[in-house]
Length: 160
Image (tube, rainbow, N blue to C red; front, side):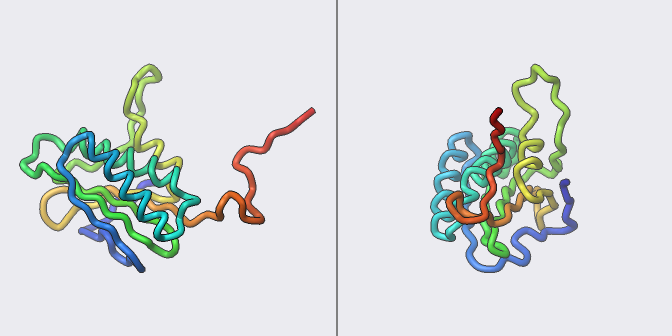
């Protein structure tokens, strides 16, 4: 479920490390930002959520690059925050239009990004920035590594 935050609460309550980076609004930044997130996750010992975190970042940042419009603010900002042992990903841009999950036609090639974020993240939402624009965020709770005892498979196979 998405939450709209009142006022700029981005980064609020962050405990620990934070990585902030500004990028030119260009499709190539998605790959570069993913590399930065991968490095941050390794440093924070959050390798178990890397796949989900990279997917969430890719969707949020791609939306920002594509839909921030022709604003004069030609940059986007990413923030990766270590929060309560998990991860908060934020993407900031100058567009004031808040995102809403769509209901794309089955043959559409796009329009499912926020639905993917909602399915993968533990929580997500958006808010207005102090100044022009908005930010969209998603949070992922820490998860045990695949080889840790007690880890259950996502899909169980049944035989017979």
